[in-house]
Every structure is written in structure tokens, then in C-alpha cells.
Length: 454
Image (cartoon, rainbow, N blue to C red; front, top):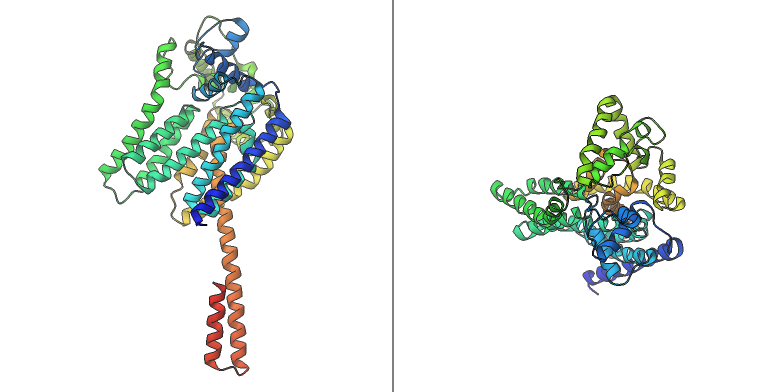
């Protein structure tokens, strides 16, 4: 069996194990439990889209009978749920199973990224970590867009390395389009595209500056073309232009108030901060008011802003009030035991991820595709609040970095053992020579031992 075939068989086996893990979580733990918060909104909105209502305010339609267009979430995940609904999958359990199956694809893509940056062994290690890590499968058991975000970000990273390996118009366009697709799941992922592409293009020293700019432009245009239907739809469906949507304005209002700056919810959000939803205005009309209210509060508490930003980042990475954050996540349907398991895994993954970045850097592997999602996730949390599920795009690349570190540790250990065995064999040959063995015989023995070790 060739090495390529061994990798494919191993990756398929690991992916199957990952699917089994997700099915066990969904069937044995989540079941047909009613989703909460954003998950319930996504589920209702997917059903409403499938039944011809379009992208509307799910709560207003479901509870008030009022149909009003919204732009608080990019549409791709909602369209996926609508597809499931059209296929007859209309229960909470069915939606979770559909998300779990989709999320399983992330395992395979992560394995391909790991192979590209650190070899087949690292690829299988990365896939194995993604298969069993609660940081990954917890998202695949929810009805939330983070599962699709992980898949799309992993695909964008894979296309980024293909762009680096073969820099031409086609690979540039594929990378840009992949980033555009990912942004149709979570808008802030748009920031990831330049954070990846610019360092990559700068590093393409064999190309002329003009050629680099052309490729950068191709990637940007491809991403814009893919993302543009969402921008056009928002400009037509709502009263005022909201190119990226209105989620950031809603978050601004909910996260900049007394309780999230000074109270027990420091670095989090508080529904009590929000103004009452309007039954007559759409989100684009409410957004300026939400934004103004948030900025007025920020202006009056500027000295507190650095503390709040650090608290948000700290919550995201589990270093500020981690136990409280685990408990707060129960409101979104994440079990406390799962949250604690994820926190423990995170503490293991962070040092491995840092080590993996150092290993790849030393091997001259470009790391901007793996570092950019971490930076974007952290920045997004600092501008909104420190919800651990906002770390999804970062978690998936940290898996790859951790696998690169583990592969390096394994390789170094094998090399050290071989070196020790060779040194012992050479010492034995030298001892034989001193005891009277002929020099030619000793050299032959040493040569044969060395060949046997390799």
C-alpha cells in the first residue's frame, strides 16, 4: 500500500470515528431537546425560509405573526437548515444530526491541512484531535453556525496553502472565493482574508511586485463576488444599507453597559442592556440607535474600556473567570461537563499550538493561514464579548498547530532513540577492537549495525 493510500484510508477511519463521537453526543445527550438563544432563532428561521417567508425576524413571525426582514446573521447556515427542512428533516434532533454530519467533513479537511503543513503523520494527528476534541464536536451537536464556520475556515486555510504552493490566478480566485463563502457564515471572517493573503503574497519573492498585486486583487475580487449577493440583498430588503448585517450593532448595545463593564458580567453580555425591540422598524432602522446608545456609554467610560477588552479576550481563551463562563454557556445549551472538558482541552491545546507555530516557522512553512483565524477571533471577541463559541475558527487551526508540535516531538524522540542505539553499537564495536578484534572486522561490524539501525 502506497503512503498516499495509507493516508487516505487512515483519514477515512478517523473521520468515521469522529462521526460516531458526534452521533453519540447528539443521540445520547442532546436528543430532541429544545434549542435556546441563537440556536432556536436559527432553527425557526430555517423553517420559515423553507416555507417561503424569506430571511425574516424569526421571533416576530413565530410569536407575533409579523414578517420583517433581518440581516443579523449571514445566510449560508440558515439556507442549510432550510435545505434540511425541505428534505423533511424538521425536528430539533433531525437538525442536530444534519449539522453533525456536515461538521464531520471538518475532520477530513483538517487532516488535509495538517498533511500539507507537517506531513502525513501530522495530518492524521490533526484529524484525530478534531475527531475527539470537545472544542470541536460540541459545535457539531448544536444548531449553530459555528460548525459550518469551522468547515469553511478549514477549507479556506487549505486553499491558502494551495495558493502558496502554486501562485496563479486560479488558486488566488479559489482562495478568495473560499473566504467569501466563510464570510457568508460569519461576517467577521472577512477580516481573515487580508490577514492571510497579504503575508503570503509578500513572501512570494520569486514573483514581481506587479504580479503579486494582481494575485492579491484576484483573490479580493473573487471574495467580493461571492459575498456580494448578501450585500445586495440587504440593500434591497431593508430600509438602510447594512453591507455586513446588523449583528455588530446588536452586540454593541448588549455588551456596553453598567453590568458588562463593572458588574459580575464583565466581558460578557446582558440582555437587560438592550432596548425594547421595535414592532414597526426593521433592523437597519434600529441599528443606528443601538450604535449611538453604545457609543455614548463608551464615551462616558473610556478609562474602563481597556479592562473590558482584556476581560473579553480572557473569557474567550479561558483565563478570566473561566468557571463562570462555563456556567453562562449553559444558557446556550452547552452542558457544564462538556464545558469543563472543553476548558481542560483548551489548556492543553494552547501550549501545543504555540509550539507548533514555532516548529512550522523554523521549517519555513508560512503560518499566516493558521495564525490569522486566531487573531481575527480574538479581535472579534474584544469588539463584542468573550463567548467561547466565537473561538471556533481559531480552535480549528490550533488543532493543526498542535498536531505539528506532536509530530515534531515524535520525530525527535525517534531520532534520539536511533542516535542512542547507534552510539551504543559504535561503543560495542570499539570495545571489541580493544579486546583484540581485527580492525577490518570491527569496521564491518560497525557498518552492518549502522545499516540495521536505518
